[in-house]
Length: 110
Image (cartoon, rainbow, N blue to C red; front, side):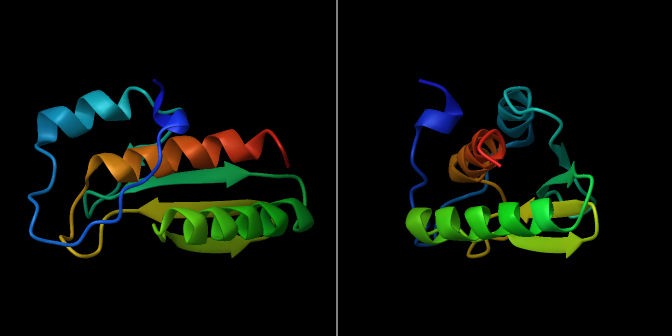
């Protein structure tokens, strides 16, 4: 089963973040996502106007509510940057990678 086909599992805390090797392997399954300086997943989507990233941000927000997994988003003309990590543990779990894959899958519908 691909990451995009899975559902996020809300973190209740008390679990360790993924080990660096496991996170690196999961990153290989994502398209153009990277680790930022804080070790969070991050991707900037590029568009030709303001409307498209705004609509995409709305779709991401609806998915975030459905999945109980909430990213940080930065919307600007022509781009939307999404940053994902599990806040309760200040680290990455598999659900962060699932969220990233599902975000990419939503892009095709914009």
